[in-house]
Image (cartoon, rainbow, N blue to C red; front, side, top):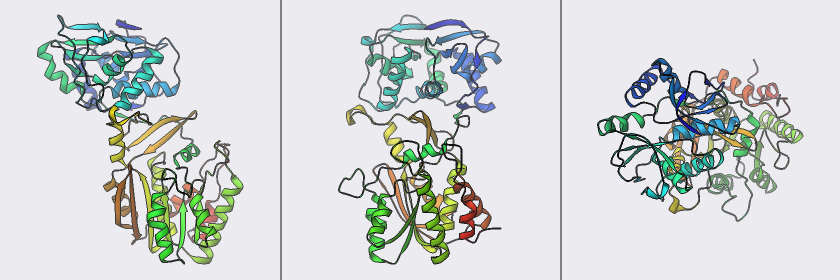
Length: 459
């Protein structure tokens, strides 16, 4: 229920707020609120702010005690709180092709408008954003608002207006006087602060959901592009090549290549039994034992594979550990083969239009490290994105010269060679991180000392 002049003196911020703001941004937000008023309702559940923490803070610094509030009638989960926060701020993510317009208004202030009266491009960019907004509106009611001029032009939150109109719901519209429109366009379309997922509990084993379900066969969906076009040709050219796949998922390709006589080892710390969170610990230990023995007997690897691993890390520290291990296991001059979801693909997905068909992914909102949190199977699951050029620079920082890189199907793919060692300290830290990762039952892999000894990195 929307209350236009609600008492906000007793509402409290959530313990977990997935957004942080600088003093500079807060000052700008306070200026916007002072000049325009509050023209997007604060979303509140049982006295706790779900979305609108920073605007509430700005209001309180201005001594304002009443503002528009949408009171949620239903309890929300942490998932819903994060989605509200993302989408409430994500309504800022207009793509510019919405063309949303109402008939002229006769006065400024709040209006409720019938959806049939809005003219708009319902097939424009951002279908995933609109789909997620509509999902939350169906569950909790029309919790937001858009902003328009007296002439009826929507100048802010057009994506929200389109989603609500598509559901046949009345649209809450805050109409501004003509002299405020230009300032409002600038102020309302500025992002105040950034998303942060620091408060979300990391359960790293969930990240194995990012591993593609690879199967060796004819299906283009399940085939590995990096294996097909780079790893297998390299093995066929040099059959004695020793390869290690780090983060191999269910290990379909390494297993198939071993059956054909190639020397391909693999490690997957979260090798699942079926599709549940049951980790096949004996299989993980066997992989680690084989690799440790292989390193002692044969040295570091001629090639290392990193497929869909860098997009499945859940922190910057985890990314550093993956790259450190990559350097630690690759011999000088050895090749690296890697692929991961690209930032270019993310931007294409976010801007997808309805004419391209039903979106199969939900919109993802990135923090300052390009991490995003997604709710899957009752757990928080993270994805990390890199622009293709950034991926190249990341590998270069960790001692690899990238000589082959391209984009394909929303992924970047690269091949490089090791030209520089990182420090032993960096390698030790990486191995300790990776080989001590936690399992669902609270135990840990617990094999870092074994692998450090094999790599001759023990202190």
